[in-house]
Amino acid sequence: MKNPSIQYYNVFAEENSSYHLSIEELYLYGLLSMMKNKQQVTITNVDVIHQFSPINFFSREKESKQRIRQHLLSLKEKEVIHFENETMIDNKSLLIISFMNDLKDDSVGKGVKGFENVDFVKFNSFSTMMEHYIYFTVKRFDKLGGFTCDYKRWAKILGCTERTAKEKIKEAVKKQIIYKNIGDYKDEKIKNRDQKKQEKNTYKTIPFSSEEKSFQTKKVEIVQANKKRANKIKNGFHPDDYIEEIKEAMYFFKTYSDDDGDVFPSAEHYATYLKVKDNVKYREPSGLEKEFIKVAERRIDYLKNNHQFHVEFEEGRQLYEEEKGINESNLSDEFVDLLNKSLEMDNTQKKTIEKLINIEEIF
Image (cartoon, rainbow, N blue to C red):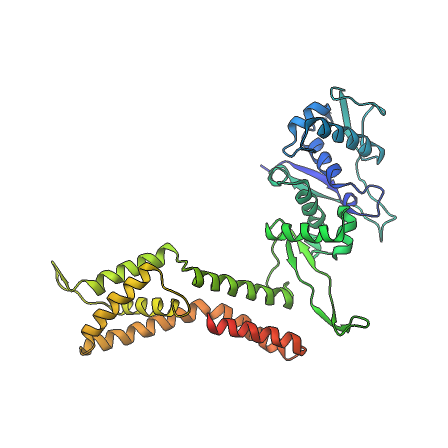
């Protein structure tokens, strides 16, 4: 069964349209739509709307209901909804609300028409009305390659300052409410400045494919991946399987014999030893790693004159090199692409890539 959804007209997020709704107006429209009966009419009052809303219109109840009343009248004035009450609405006034259909605006650009659906589950997932508004604004363009917009226009759409718009969009991207494809640099330079112009960012509510991602986006993702990798190494972070691997290898390095006879480390255990040594090359080892290295090296010193030890150790080294190569192959491919494209970069961009390569070599 298809999830029930709210039908938002595309003109609601067009800043130059007479149908343009504010952040709170759009959220109220969504609430009223969710409350429709089978006749596609909403029968309610301000008290019910206030109680029904997952997000308050204001921290204090009195002001919250006052805003709801104001927004109801505004939606009616913009001819988005209709109800019989004129200008006086109290909290208990019965409202029989009908919705205008096929809203469009031919005066904006080449004309704006159509609608976008947002299902009830998604609507209820937003923690702020701003998130809800940003999501809808972007979702309209998912099937068209994304919503291309600079922060100056975002400010007009959201009805806030450019600085606030930038912060809110950044938060939405961080929470993966929307996804950003960073604009690439042009050959043309900014007037009176030794700096290249940059394309506008593009946004979607679904992740961009690798083919869609700009060069700048891929470059930033590599930096972020290396920072994350560096932080894991710096903080001694290890997943459970890594810890279990150390504990298992520790047993074979520490134990010389058991009920089944003599016990020796295998190639897999030497591979673990080499992995741990590599991991702690640029940081202090954790307690477990420190103990493991001490135990392993004591056993290695004990076996160093044994021919079989050298055979097993060499196999372990090859195993580790293969594992390391698999883990790093994807990242290395990205760097090859970056290096190929770096031939077309200016000196500033090349220095950025060189820094990235240095990070990769270290970690």
